[in-house]
Image 1 (cartoon, one colour):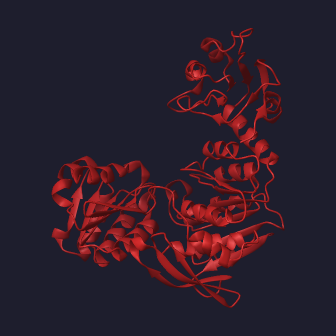
Image 2 (spheres, helix red, strand yellow; image 1 turned 30 degrees about the horizontal axis):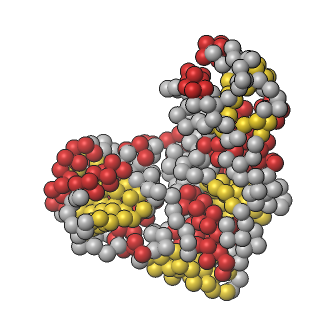
Image 3 (cartoon, helix red, strand yellow; image 1 turned 60 degrees about the vertical axis):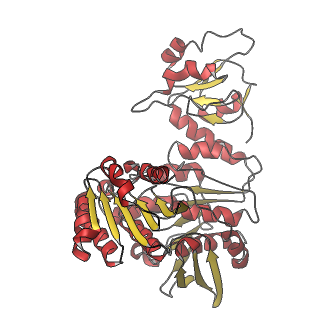
Length: 470
């Protein structure tokens, strides 16, 4: 990353220097008082549960000498304004809003980098996997950066931008949202040249009202496009048809119906061994192999290939990049120990991703297929129906044992029981209740899928499985 002077920070944020020197510098930025390092700049963000201003003393104890605050009174109480004359003077920048200041500084910093292209990725499902695949393809030819973990929101994205190396050529940036206007804010910060929309599902339908509302929110990624910008969409999704998403920019479509610019066919799912499929582009066929579980990743991989062709990367070169792809943890992460194989897909869940994960479970070799499925959150008034349908799908796919966990998952268990025997379905109101019984249920030879919405914290079950079998 590149050093920034206090003067640059002042100009980018419109802040006022309360103490310190304009020629001083900061290297890297943080909003977490537990992780801030000596040369970092610290942004004191107020939040619902914690206020960064309350931790200014801790920040100074860790050696940090540059802080951005919006509450001068709290800065005064923390003692950061009374250190003038010390050998290491504290740089204190006062702004009206520390979150906006963080975003403004990130936008400024991004403008300093020698970027050839900025790629934004959004969608109801598959955006993190697609982001990772884009990264592995683009880095075969360019110095490439991406968000890490789930840094895809109003705080995580600017922190990602500020962490980029100063010689970066391509930025691959996932953009998440819960409501209208959030993608617009991120797109304004980045001003992407290329955007990828993976899917329009029903995640956040509780707040956005309908799938059409979700589409409108996702399409905010194109708000700062011009005629040279490129939108890449999964045309297999009904709401991402050409007619619904075309605009005053270039449009590239990917799909499995034969009408798209990139056509996906002959998908072979080898479970934990990955997938293979055929990609047709300009009447030429390519065989693509992905070391990534899940047949749905054929579309995600093809979206990544299509976007990277805009960067001048051929399909053959892209295929080489995909062969080395590794997805972010907790997304169809498959590992085994002591005769038990676990498909850890605990990052999040919606009906579409649940079905895809169930398909991967079915395709993975094992003596018994066990699906441990928890609540899918934010599905609105139709939540019970969606859970029941997923449960029925699991039963119809021939799963040996379905274990439903959580209040909303009660309907999932009911759905499974309509398609399979009562003895093949178990229901637990809480994951703690299940974990007490886990040692008697999960046995060597099992292939186990664990999946639910992030707030269910189902990774605790994955940890318990491996702990008990040591």
